[in-house]
Length: 60
Image 1 (cartoon, helix red, strand yellow):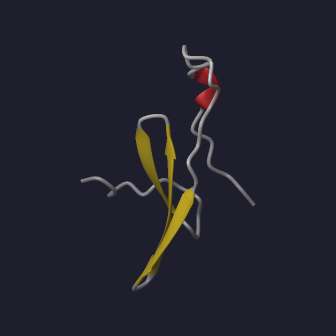
Image 2 (spheres, rainbow, N blue to C red; image 1 turned 30 degrees about the vertical axis):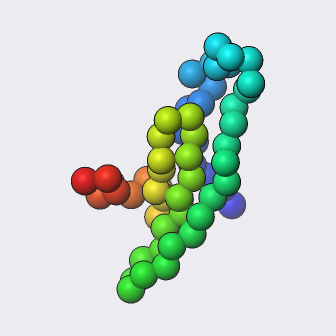
């Protein structure tokens, strides 16, 4: 089940009135790991596919 909550309600409606736009998701599989990538507004987010938690090493 879906567990990631980026607290988008705190950002409110974007000023241009388009609402919350999401462009899709991508999945990556590597040795011993799987990641789900998604974007919201100006952020690219990587989640651990097994736990749904953000990948703390992503972008470092």
